[in-house]
Image: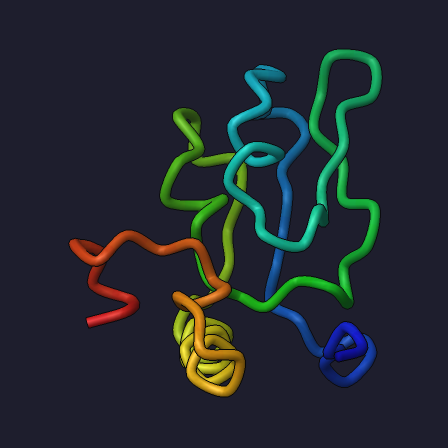
Length: 99
C-alpha cells in the first residue's frame, strides 16, 4: 500500500526551535519520520507526512511542538484495521487519542 498523504499545507504541526533542546524524542515517537535533528535542534522535514497523532507534542519535554491531535489517530486506527495490524499512529492503548 502506498504511503497515505493528507492535503498539502493543512497540517497543524508547529515547532518552536527556540524551546527545542535537541533531545530527539520527537524523532523516536513520530510514526512517519517527520522530524530530523540539525545543529542540535529538531526540524520538520516533511510537514505533509504528519498525521497529527500528537505523539511528538505529548512527548516533548519543553513543549516546543504543538499539533491539534485527533484526526490523524483516527486515520491510524482505520489503516491498522484495514491491514489487520495495530494502529499505525503508535499511540499506546492507555493514550486518550486512541480511546
